[in-house]
Image (cartoon, rainbow, N blue to C red):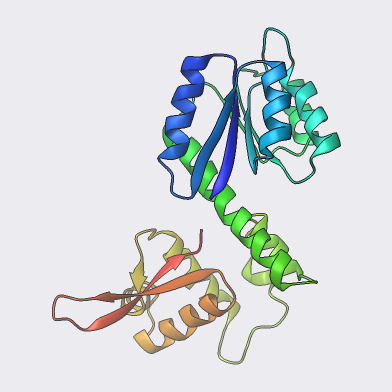
Length: 228
């Protein structure tokens, strides 16, 4: 579970944020701080994985608190949730290494998307710390959410043409609910076998995921989706 501390001076908003967080699997709220003293004390005692941090407080500036956290706890990630719309506030938050900057009023779908992205990031980092000593550029790009274009692929295997690969990837991107090799082949004008070869290559390089679905007659089919 990802342990979250909410730092928000408005208790009503803090409670809304708590309910939002706890609707997302894999998270738990371990505390709520409404002033500077509580924020420092709970951060030191609870050592959460993540802070949801506001900027404006009656007796504290959230950006100053961000700096305080960074000087003491390099392993705590921070998401700013704030009414601060000043460009300078955003700039300071980004320099402080926040994972995201969400402007109030919070849109639930936008907030949930951030929590899903953070959980994917958190899980990967935890796994890499245990399993890896070195990582490659492809893994960094995937962690940072950067899509590597087909043109950037250093070398494509025999039978995979860049132009066709771009077409296949474009079709998959247009179908977030998933698409079969037969449907891809129909859209780009190739056979099912050819489409599947390209799709399986995209799976192998981590740009597409594949799952099994059962049709109306029970025949299993591989359904391909763009990797989130």
